[in-house]
Amino acid sequence: MAPLIKTPRAIVTVDPNKRPWEQTVPLHNRWHPEIPAVGEVQEGEVFRVETVDWTGRQIQNDDSAEDMKNIDLTSVHNLSGPIRVTDTEGKAAMPGDLLVVEILNLGPLPGDEWGFTGIFDRENGGGFLTDHFPKACKAIWDFEGIWASSRHIPGVRFPGLIHPGLIGTAPSHELLAIWNEREKALVDEGENALTLGKHLHTRPLALLPNATGALLGKVEKGGKDWERIAAEACRTIPGRENGGNCDIKNLSRGCKVYFPVFVEGANLSMGDMHFSQGDGEVSFCGAIEMSGFLELKCSIMRGGMEQYLTPMGPSKLNVNPIFEIGPLEPRFSEWLVFEGLSVDENGKQHYLDASIAYKRAVLNCIDYLSKFGYTKEQIYLLLSCCPCEGRLSGIVDVPNACATLAIPVSIFDQDIRPKKGGPPVGPRLITRGDCPSCPYEGSLPTQKNLSAA
Image (cartoon, rainbow, N blue to C red):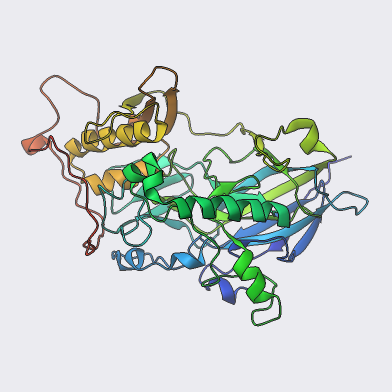
């Protein structure tokens, strides 16, 4: 007998040209246990979920960066779901279970085969290197099958490793309170209480609940519960115990993710689809952001949290998902690798600080690749979205942590490896224009290379 054909059942469909609040199936951009499910699936069922891009079409396919500079970051990420999951007998996933989510297929929405990578203005979002790159910039990418190329960063082409930047289960009220308490304490202590906070220059330190821009799915705006839920609900910016916005580029076709379940039904949500991303997504809006679809299958491991996830913290809820990498990834055989140590740009020694070490690796790579006809903004955007590999290579050799950033050399239309005679100059140097940008008009200090003079 021929096997049954499992055509995915559509749970959420979207129109990428409509704003999030205009969609037929309500979207949400906050985490809260009382956001109702928009659909239900049984374990073993293959289903399809469509998503808008994480900004909700605030960024346009054009040659201006004004939209990137003036983006409203109170209204992100725009997520599809929540989706309630039951077993084949109709019994819902329960707190303490593991929800096993298998990614079968994913891609851009048909007719919307383009994406964007951006640098936010330092006064509005910033990013990992915001002290070096304070002005808003944007690059548009076009998709041709598995390939991405950009008119704003010419001479580069690479295959995508498509993945959801954000996918996770809903938190319980107890877990929500834990998140809000610890993140508020971070904000209350301020940047001067944090050595790293002074040197990465990202602001704010955390994004606390904010009703402005909140989208709560099927919770009726103006109803008796909307204001309370909007005031309690967590922002979706960081990854947390439920998964969420972890931006792991390897969560692609064939992956299997084991999510902890905190509420009845699990209430799985997803969004922030990426055509490609580099490890770290360093410019913040750093992947190739796009609208997209996912085809998924779920199963439930009863009692799986206690069996497999050991809490690390004061609460039994302080656990994290685990996942299996799928078998389909781009293959590269030649890489150029840049090292970074935990010594900052001012020559200050830090103790085993992996973030400072990775920042140095990224800066070293940007300065190197800018010798090949690109502006530093173009390279910063490229390192956010190309299939580069970041590693924490050493964390024991006091006082220096060592991070590495590996770039596949074949994505360029020229050989970027060091050679006798130095990098290309004169007629051998092919300049690559620049990406759309807006001037930085703020007053925060910016970082300059002290050795540049």
